[in-house]
Image (cartoon, rainbow, N blue to C red; front, side, top):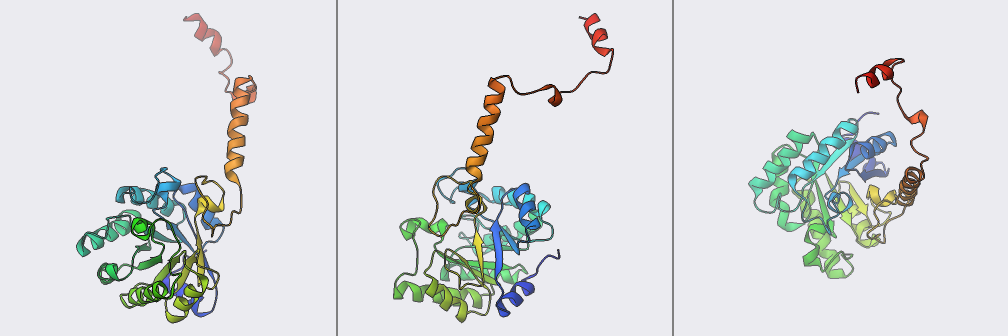
Amino acid sequence: MKKKSRFDLQKKKDAGEKAVWITAYDYATAMFAEQAGMDMILVGDSLGMCIYGYEGTVPVTMDQCICHCEAVRRAAAQTFIIGDMPFLSYQVSVEEAVRNAGRFHKEAGVDAIKLEGGMRVIPQIRAICDGGMLVMGHIGLTPQSSGQLGGFKAQGRTAETARALLEDAKAIEEAGAFALLVEAVPPEVCKVIRDELSIPVYSIGAGMDADGQLMISSDVLGIFQAFTPKFVKKYADLGSEIQKAFKAYADDVRQGRFPEEIHTYKMVEGEFSKFMDKI
């Protein structure tokens, strides 16, 4: 499978073909995602909740994101990888935003970075693009600023807020972003944004009219147990299966059913007696 470029993703939009991508934070998940033919993998700052058990994404650090991006890159060499810039890695200054975006590329070999926000991050988007890197925008429900939004709530549900999202989207495209992610926004608003922009517009919880869909791998697999957003469709219940497997293992050990002889190694013939002679 040949790794897609930004131009391949643009061609999919222009041809009316849907792009499919998913988050991954570790080698095994990324390997399976590539084998399944995902167009892109996002190493999202959602790893804060899915991997580290944080209440949100704010505590996630640059070093954590880069470490997980490195693992995903090794597992999915032929997949377009996007590194998610964590909280305060780009908000402090334009210079710091460019430097941290560069770290994702130099240290983890990502193909692009993603950052959250509209008008207020336009200088950062433009500067990172001017630095020769690909940027994906992210508007709507932006988890890093969920405190300002009043929590993890859908956005763009009034005419005024929908217009603001559209203006953000247009500004992000004008600043040089190659694509845009829209999260937790009414489908009709996402459709307008998609129609108004020439770059790909992707959805996570923003309806089927986008140019493609993103899902969190832990949600798709039924592993993340803390909460389930309305827009999630579970395609497996691995959480229950893992729990069953762990319980069966524990029961086997406690009842003396594991390990059996087939699970052990044998000494070379005659060596045990020599060993005992020295005791």
